[in-house]
Image (tube, rainbow, N blue to C red; front, side, top):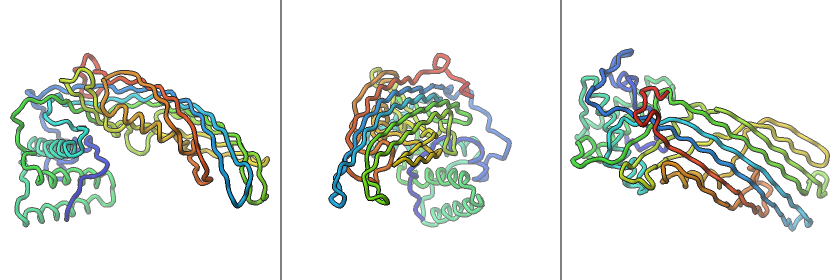
Length: 353
């Protein structure tokens, strides 16, 4: 049975005795003693603020129903995100978020394998990478038995899958468990238990226009009003686990790398009126993919603090409904501010508070 690298990699799940208990290591309620010679953890706070102005038009020429179908939309959105990530303070040779996909994958696999090695070593166990077909089959059988013992608990299964993925992947990189022989330059900043998180995402959208109404066989006016204001919302997992950061200590100009800038969609009211009839519903409100993609791209490799502005094309409907077809044209004007700063002078605290 082959195990592939998960598409959604969350390194925080590798930490803690829950992993060792699953592997028959660290007993419940007992943590390994800290190594006084180890590098001290560092905590940084990532904060970003974005203001977005939106305008868009829609036109549709339907040969089956000739006539003028159109709309004009205006809106505004505001995002504020704050969270903290922690580094173990060890300078690493490889960039965990290297722009080159192959080097990034190698860095992640080696990091995961070494995390597993360190956890097992602290529990008094060693890491022995399977070499023979029999050893690999035994490891796979062990994984399947422990997966079954999770009894459908997806968090348990996810943790086990990530750990075993690291062990299987280490077979592809024999150097994974060997110490590096050259000095490191990268600090990995990862989520941790209890990592704090704050967010506020607000939006409003107003649309006016005319469209074909099939039941009346006529062109009728319509309007749509959307607004949302959500604070500190999550999708079932701690929001800070969506984030991974790297700092290149030798790059003073663009020393920050971010893997994913997670912005939760706000929940709010949608009021739709067509031909005098109005419906209201509470629902998750859309955020323009063009804006989210640009923010992610801008912060993927950037200075540790800064501002940026952009005018982005909007070829997709702002209300998230593209079933009407037709031509969508618009502009998003975005202003972004961000900082990735050390907490308490850069030394940080174990709990991040």
